[in-house]
Every structure is written in C-alpha cells, then in structure tokens.
Image (cartoon, rainbow, N blue to C red; front, side, top):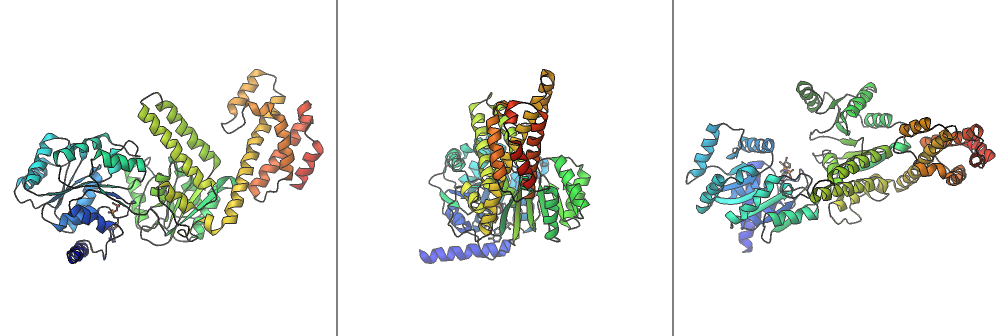
Length: 536
Ligand code: ADP
C-alpha cells in the first residue's frame, strides 16, 4: 500500500513538472489532489495566488475523462483555458459569448464516447439547465466524469463578500451525480462561509485543507495621518526613499487618486492614476507603461503586476479581506516587500458613516441583508483594530482569518514587532490628538455660541460643523472643558502635529477668555492658559 502511494506521488510530481514546469507541489496541493483522485470530496481554502487551480488541473491529467470546473466569471475562464491550451492541454469553456460553431464542436466532443477534452469550464447558470445536466449524466454513465471543481465557492454563501444567487443552483449537483467527487475552492476563510459551502454543496465528509494566509515576505506598517504634518509629502518621501521600485497606492475615490497622483508627480515620482473613470485608451496606456516600468507608481482603485514592492493604502480599506487581497498584490514573486497603510481618523469616520448609512437603508429590506450589513460593520471594526492596537499586525491579519498564530511567526516583520515602543507612543499620541481635536471643536462652538443670540446665525454655525465636531452636550459641558485645559497644560506632546493642536486649542481658549464676559469662560484660569501657551 505504501509503495503504491509513493508511486502515485511520483507520478503526480512528474505531471506537475512535465506540464507546468513547477519543481514540486506547494503545501496542501498534493493532499487535495490525492483526495479527489481517491473519490473523496475536498474543501480547499487557500489564499489568492496560493495555487488552487493546480488542485483540479493535475487530477484532470492523471486519468482519462473530464474534470468539470465551475467558475463565476467568463474572463477568468477564458484566461485559464488560454493558458492551458498554450501548454498543450485540451481545455475549453462554454459560455454565451462563444459562436454556435465553437459550442457545437465542444458538444460533439462531449457526446462522443471518447472525449478528447480534459477540462471543461462552465458557468453556474449552465449547470442549472436541464439539457446540460442530462449531458453530464450521460458522460458520467460512461465513467468519464472524474471531478467537479467549484472555484470561488464562497459565492454560494450569502455570508461571503461576493454572493451570487446562481451558485445556489449548484446544490443539485450532488443529487444528480451522487458519486462524482466535488472539490470546493475558495480564498474566503470565514468559518460561517466554510460551513455554508460544505452544506450547500452537500459535501460528504470532505477532506478540509487550509493553507496558511501568512505572507512572510510582506512587512506590515501603519502610519498615522493625524500625527503627520502632511500625509501626501510623507508618502512621496517614502516612495523616494525606496528608489526605483514598483508600487501601488490604493485610494478610496477616483478624485483622490487624481489628486494624489498629481502631487506625487510634482515631487518627481514617475506615477499615474488608474481607475474606471479614465477612458479605455488612457487606461490601457497607463497599464502598458506600468507593466513596462515606464512608470513606477500607480495610484489606483484596482490593478496587478507580479513584482510590486510596495502596496500603500492611502485610506483605510473596508475590511480585512479587502486589505489582505490588496496588500497581497505586493511581492507575488516571493521577494521582500512592504504594505504601508495610512490611517486617519477622518477616513475612519467617513467609512463608518458610509457603512451605517448602508445599514439604515438595508434594515428596511430583508433580514438577511440586514445581517450582511451588520457583518460589514463588524468587518470594519477588525480593520480599525489592526490600526489602533499596538500588537503584532501579522497576528491581527491571520487571526481574522481564523488562524492560530505562534508567537514566533512574525520575526519582527511588522512595525509593532520591530518598533514596539514607537508604535505604542504613536498610539498614545493619537488618542491625545483626537481628544484635543474633539475639544477644539468644542471650543469653536463654545466661542461662537457666546456672540450668537440670533437663531439664524446659530443654525448656520451648526450646519457648518462637520460630523466630527462636538455635540450639543459639549456646549453645556464647560466644566469638562476647564478640566481639559488643565490636563492639556500638563500633557507632553512630542510630535509637531500634536503640539500644533495644543497651541491651537490654547489660543482659542485664550481668545475666548478675552472675547466673552461669560461666567463659565471666566472660570478658565487666564493665567494658566497663557502660561501653558508660552511653554508650548
Ligand atoms: P489561486 O487560484 O489560488 O489564486 P493560481 O492557481 O492562479 O492561484 O496560482 C498562482 C500562481 O502560483 C500561478 O502563477 C501558478 O503557476 C503558481 N503555482 C501554483 N502551484 C505551484 C507550485 N507547486 N510551484 C510553483 N508555482 C506554483
């Protein structure tokens, strides 16, 4: 038995080397392949770029017959089929975009007793049509349907980030073709999604394989916009200090992409904006220039290349999953690289506002949608924790995917592990700076409210204030304000931004002392304020 296993392994490695030119299997690939070849169902969780396709492509070459691959996007299918054909492997896809002639040829091959096809890619919609299902049954009755691989299997779960109703129809596969092994593949690690996938596809005691999501070659760092004089300039300096590297900067919005790209260009960085707002010609010109290294940096909403050395998020992403996918575009060549996230309180508030608005809207509709938007709010909380906690960043990422992380894993390849004191200090200052800001807006409202006995002016003022500023409670909360001045006078701030905010606040407090005759303001000790201001 053991000898047989060794022989089988050797044969599979030979197939890998012969057809794909890879020296060896990656972690978990061989287990997945052997499971389905022995007729067992398999659930494969691997990060993007982890090598999922090999898990069903090798079984397609290991014995005669067909592997059916269900995939959600025609573009994805086209790409894979093209790559396989280039390697001389008989693969096709069936979709509405093909000519009748091409489709007929594929059907003819399937109907023949000895199909030459090894891999057939189809959409979930096609599986649901009765005609196609009876064709599959026929192929199966001849013993020629070896495996059904469901790629991007999280699309079946409404808990995933990419639910597709058409995937639900795949639950009929097990019923119609009870003894064909099914392999579900995904990069979405939420336990709820996994359970949903296994149940929906009726997988029978599947072999569950999970590859680690750890990307040891990425160094993770967070910088705090609120503690920087100017995040734009900071980013240009970082990019310059890296020299001639390939980088992606992600922004939340197109206008910011354009603005940031213009700023970086002005600072001598070869860069361009790349987003859906550009016309096709310009987009492909930017892409060509980037791929051929004529430009160094793209400021983008979505793009890919293998030798990216740095991925920078200029705004906080909406979930750990999005962050992982995007930061994971760095270092796909396995060489060292960096993920840098600029975290700003304004960005955080903005995202929270967007998500809460979505929740309010959705709570009027179905309860499952409501649960989904609650999920997006808790997803975002994890992202905020990643930025606001002084613990290992890598650990935060991996734990959010349900992985257990041994203490030695990071090896000082994130800022929190490499410079723990600095990160802790930054976070402390971030808290102080934000508190100062809060009180600053309190003081602004406070000052203005003194010379506003006119309702119109007051309401104008309120309308001018952004969400971040104080609430009505702040105005009546002046004792708190006085306490705040006292504690602020004692606080020691070392960053320029923190110090500026302190001076700014004290100046406002001083001004308010002179401008008003209000009892409460007079309670603010004029001398104490002037003293602290001088010191600052
Ligand atoms: P996924 O579908 O998980 O995102 P892919 O199947 O597209 O990943 O594989 C990602 C990359 O890894 C591809 O370029 C592929 O050629 C490569 N790859 C897959 N398996 C191996 C292996 N055993 N050894 C080396 N490279 C591999």
